[in-house]
Image (cartoon, rainbow, N blue to C red):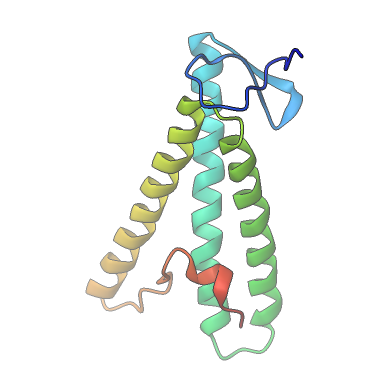
Length: 137
């Protein structure tokens, strides 16, 4: 049985890999590989930022912040789902891009927190990466 572009095992070849929707296909060219990497980096940044921002909105005493926190949480779940689907393409390059870009985005959030704490701020985006999935407001 022909599987088309999808393979039920890890593979390296970026040619013909469909990403999320049928019209987004990496054709193996440097341009398409770079564009997919930029898209994955953007999704990873949004995912990690909204995870941190959701916790920050949740920790304030203002009762209306529960709605803001819910919006951040919803966006974070959406982006994490998209990243998971990209990883499920089983393409090693895309798989590693999701992991690396998510780690870099998390590192950026942590550096930002520590800088704010040193400058007398609250470090308002402080969160353990998996904490957003476990705790509510």
